[in-house]
Amino acid sequence: MTRVPPIRIPLLAALAALLCVGTYCQSNTSLDAAHTNSSTTVTQDSQHLESSIRTEMDFLASDKLQGRGSATHDEYLAAEYAAAQFQAMGLKPGAKDGSYLQHVPLPQTLPPLARRLLANLDHTPRVATTNVIAILPGSDPALRNQVILLTAHLDHLGMAAEKSGDYIYHGADDDASGCIAVMELARNLAAGPAPRRTVIFALFGSEELGGLGNAGFLDHPPIPLKNIVANLEFEMIGWPDPAIATGKLWLSGYDRSNFGATLAQHGAPLVPDPHTRESFFQRSDNYGLAQRGIIAHTVSSFGLQPEYHTPADDISHIDFPLMTHSILAIEPPIQWLANTDWKPKWNPGGKP
Ligand SMILES: [Zn+2]
Image (cartoon, helix red, strand yellow):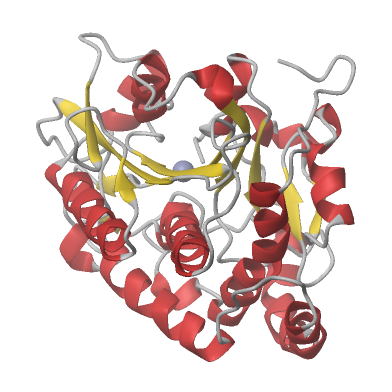
């Protein structure tokens, strides 16, 4: 999630976030039941999924990856890791050169937002950023040209320029949590019968610099952009949001289209973003896609925690049961979306 506009953090919200961790566990049973009763053909055992999530988080948010700074070698290592995961799932590579990695040169002059951000960060050479693109081809000849795009961002803030105290911005929630959601949804979709529609999984570089990896994807997409039926960006699903009901996720720009409400009708635990003053619809990679006309929203449970964009966004603050249940709960409606011919539409005035 990019930094602007400035985040305002009410103290009560931060306190409520601490209290919410305990109450979450009480709802696990009903979420488990909902998942077990769903009509999906493939389900993941929740314990196995949580263990997989922890393993991925242990790598992506580790000190060794040095905060996956935008367009750094550390971001590249995260991209290689995700590409290896997608390859092991049997997904097709989506970059033009036949690999999973799309290299996007940074512009000669970075946007003012990016220059301000980098002023306080490690002075590492930054020449190109890396996207990871993997494709699960659709099985229905009439629907396989229709694409569902599931995305998150690989990069975070890297290291502070001043190396004292904890100077690594681990980005466990922002956005290792989203990348893990996309990888686990991919793993599950790839393990079952091929969906009727094509599903593309993309992890973007340099989101924190203003969506630069995503801009490269839009300039050189693996398929014509008009084929993308809808995009869900997963951002910061590792912390509970005390402003919404336990076990729910919020969708940015919910009322701009009929996408969120329809997914909710099909079992998605989605509610409108309660933090409308934060303009989250404009603050992640979904926005660049939406500006091109694609129905694109961000899924999150960010509750304006004070650890946002600090080194304390680390593994110790991740609510793993919450992440596990969020991924399990969103999976059946995504299975539905990948197998239906229904298309979402902008509501009047909703298209940016
Ligand atoms: Zn961020």
